[in-house]
Length: 410
Image (cartoon, rainbow, N blue to C red):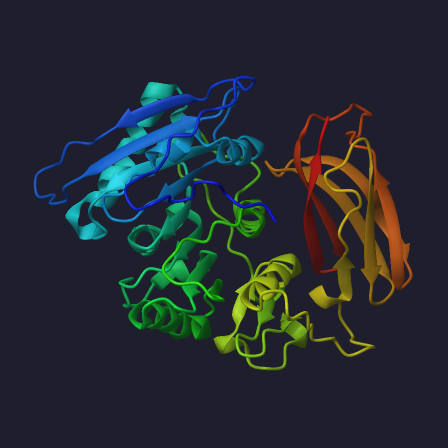
């Protein structure tokens, strides 16, 4: 798995990483919104980068650092810029001193997006939805903003904070969220996030709680874990067409389409097969996210999956399994292997990270149970060679869906 080199580096000291000389520089914008009458926040300083060549911004990856620490330098990070470029996302960092939306800090963020829209010519920025990743106090800001304006948040990652608000989250339970706690962190931090998770999962919160083994108060830096969660959230939540003049209507992921994870025994299972009670279980949008959670919380020691009963009358997510493609990354071709628990009608498609269909490999084909393979040559439906970048392979059999990320190198 990849590890991010400077994620929320030492508190208050975020290194500004140079964009490689061979890459076109992003357009970068800064703004510190003046306070309006009645607003009481102190510091609100934002920086936003738009990767070169982007014609429309589909969303914003917002990295939020601890109190008065500075994540603005991260908008120059090459790996984060590449992630955003693949998804047509802008990248934003900030230096903040308040997490209370009642102080005006949330409105200051929204006013800043309007300023960035004017300055960049990307009018859609004023209405863009955010995907938030926050560490410690920064995770609290991200969570509080999500509860305050859930219609503006695609997904949320909050790491190791200890003072997240504990009142009802309302519509924020529809926002996919990954809560990280550390095995050796302060108990009040563990209790804070665990309590919020356990209070809202019975209400259907699309949330994950992950205890990081042998870790204290430190950020999660593994992009091999974080990036697939980002991919799954934006693929499932963003509409195909992003309106230029209003907030996009984010898609609610049906709870029963997901997978669940038992936090004590660290096994996973499809919703229809899970036998340990869903109310306290972690919720995953798809199997692959559950498998990565399982590996993370068990340090690779667990791999147990609840099997559906044979002869089940309806398809469930456990009926299909998309195996790792080989090779990946690839050039010029990769083999996609998938397993069917029973005979079914198969659709196997390739999408870019904007959610656009680029190639159909299998369409409406009846296949028997067992292992199957298809090959993708990195070309679109017209036979044109596609550029270097990340793509999503999506397998669907009835209502069962599995997906994985592919990287094409030229």
